Length: 308
Image (spheres, rainbow, N blue to C red):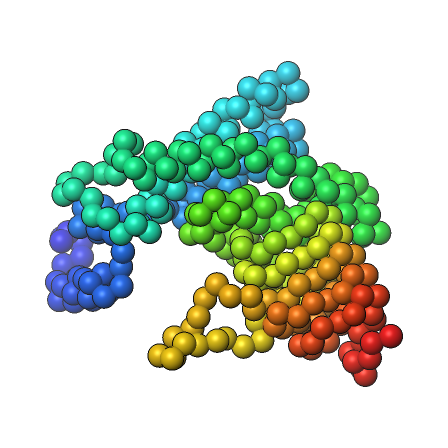
């Protein structure tokens, strides 16, 4: 311990922290922590997603001195950098999920099965980037058309928190689909901390999606959202209750969040819980608490909770 810290008399605290860490690892952790960190890095994933977003919109969100003639080279450079880093983090997640030990004193080698599997998955992810860009374009168009205060699509891209959150979600959702849920969750939680919009990467969201204002929106893992759906701030698409097994442990991976069909509008503060269906073209008013199905073309209001 350094001389600078001696006056705190930290030896006992450091020893006790080591004991508590080891107790946690022995009880719950997967993988081998004896030699180095073997979990994906939040800092690295945050850098990757920022780089990928620049590659998707290089002339709007990329380097300020970028010129059109250098755009393809710039995009290729960004993608190469981001995908290399992403494959490394994906290998760490796969190694962690497998729970296999690492030989003492070594790092996870590039020739390991996890590293080769990670490269294969990230190659698939790369092929999906053009489709992700097209989906995001449809969401930007929906925001521009759905908000009378939006003066241009560029304003939507540069300024709207809902688009910022959806960018992270779309990238993360592809990783989630490729069996990399931890990397995906790190990506969406970055956007959550920056915007107050919490979209689980497992949610299924169709094109033309628009979150207006955004703060406080929550979309659960099993939610399914149709085309051209619009949400306002503080909307929750959540679970009504949590199912437990015979031992009282929460069950996971079962349908527990709403299905929202095409062309639905959900206004500020609405809370929609459970595996219910909101029929197409319906309007859900502000501050409604809803736990039952809604027929298509319904208008549900807070004051009397009527369907018309």
